[in-house]
Image (cartoon, rainbow, N blue to C red; front, top):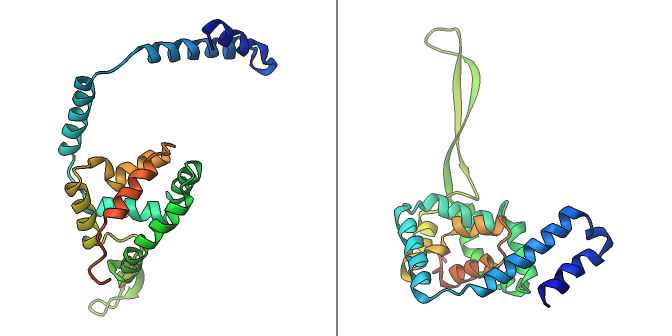
Amino acid sequence: MNPIAAEASWRAVPWLSTPALSETGSTAVRMAESDASKSRDWSEVAADDGAFRTAAAATRFDGEQEAQALHSIMDGDSRTPCRTACIALGKESTLTSMRAIWEPWRAQSHSELAGWSCAPARRTCPSTSSACMQYTCNLVADPASASPARAEAVNQVVSDLDAEHLRPTGIEQRLIAGVQPACMGLFTLLQNLRPPPDA
C-alpha cells in the first residue's frame, strides 16, 4: 500500500478520524517506510551482540534470583504472562510438555527447607520474671526457595549454550513486558536443563 493510500485509509475510518489519531497513523506509516529502507549489515549486528554480551558478562549470575525467576515463570506470578505468550504463538502444547520437564524440579523445591520462619511472642523471661519478647522459630518449606542444584543447572545451560538471554530473570522480564517470543527462550532453557540430582 502506498503512503498516500495508507494516509487516506486512516481518515476513512470514522473512529480514527480525530486529528491526533490520524496524525499518529501518518507518523506510523512514515516510520514503517523509514525502517524498511534501513538495512543493517553484519558488522552492526555483531556490534550490538558484543554490547549485549559485555553488559551480560558484567552482571553477576545470581543463582538464587535465577532459580526464583524460573519458579515464578512456571508456578508463580509470571505464569499467566508465560501462558498468554505461548497461546499467542500457538505453543500451548509445547508449554505442556515443558511442564513435564519442570515437574521434578518443582517437586524438589517443595521438599527443600528454605530456612527459618520466626515470629515474635510475648513471654515471661525466666531470668528477670518480667515480660519480654521472645521469638518462636520453625523451619519452613518454601516452594520458591532457591535450590542450589536448580541454580547450578540453569547456570550450566546458560554457560554451555553461551546464551545469556536464557537467564530466567531476563525471560521473565520479557514475558511480563509482552515479548511473546521470550517463551521460546524458556523452552530452550528447559529442554537443556539436566534432571535434578534426586530424579
